[in-house]
Image (cartoon, rainbow, N blue to C red):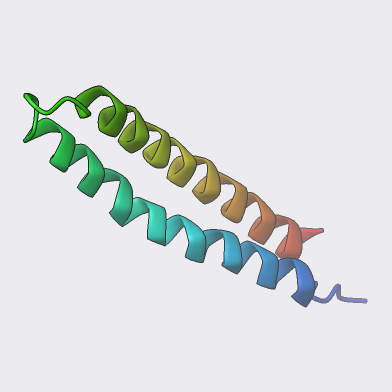
Length: 74
């Protein structure tokens, strides 16, 4: 008997990866903006925001791939 793919969990994994795609492009853009405005008073705040957004992107990619694997192989 073959197992079927859990479509609900698969959709959840795809949603995680779609959200990660947004953060993958936003994070480096924020970091680029921060590094080109080092004299601005909000430099540190924008830099920290960019690092956090990049971290969230990495987390969402791993969470999305993990959820996809769970949907396909559990």
